[in-house]
Length: 390
Image 1 (cartoon, one colour):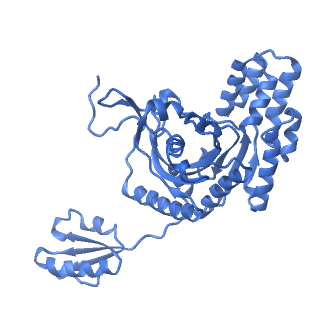
Image 2 (cartoon, rainbow, N blue to C red):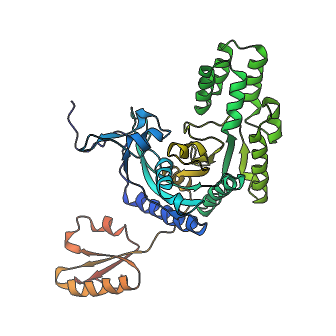
């Protein structure tokens, strides 16, 4: 076993330095105020859950779960997502008190990494779950809330790509000849490997009508002008009517310009059963967030109610906000000599009572006074010939 080096961290773990921490706190505050104003109540779940409940129900693969064992021999996991723990809480208690439920969260989730590829093993998510409403209006509310939340952060250049698990499943089932072929193509779509998709279709040696349909579908389904253009690939399907209704609702909300429909969209979060979507914004090369309908997940916890929601990756959100100019908060430092501590303390207390961020620092303890002062917008020196108004 290699020795632990003093400054190394576990694979995928990162430190959050003060400047980033303050930005995360600002995101948390803005998000909390916005979501509460939309009727969503915040909830907190344990960092550690039982593997046999949340671990197995989660859509995160077993290889990416952080596992540990408690003193009674039970296998536990660090929560890999927030949707599954919230489903557990909702079905065990909250749905007995109120339905539909509108819940929100801001929390860290944990995904084990096998190799260092720049992916964090712990990251923060902010999101909502709307539980107990099967209607298209609930899905529209979730998408609209996600878009309006991004606008609340000052983002205008973003796009929400919407698909439907039911439509895609229907197409893959109809034009393949085994579950293995269907799963292979779905995995390639999750990976956005469209070249691999075409190669796999050709390798399956399907009847020409089926292979041609799949290849044409992959060309057209990502650039649909109207949802009805996908009808030629799908047998009569209620999901298409559902998506038509959803598109109209987003038009009513004046948000249609931010939307694109892509029926190749698939997710590694296997509990999505209906509409699903991803959010992209300039400044990040990865999806900023994702969401969708996951009615089947509640059944794992013996509850047959509909549910839909979304989550935003806070680290990726910060990437998109990096270009925004942030007004520097006024920060005062009061430097003092030992014999002038009382006078300096009085001055500090006056600043703090006025609501100003103020640091009290013994001047003789500074190694590089000029470098230290550069971190503050105002420097006040008490004693040693200092000017109290400096």
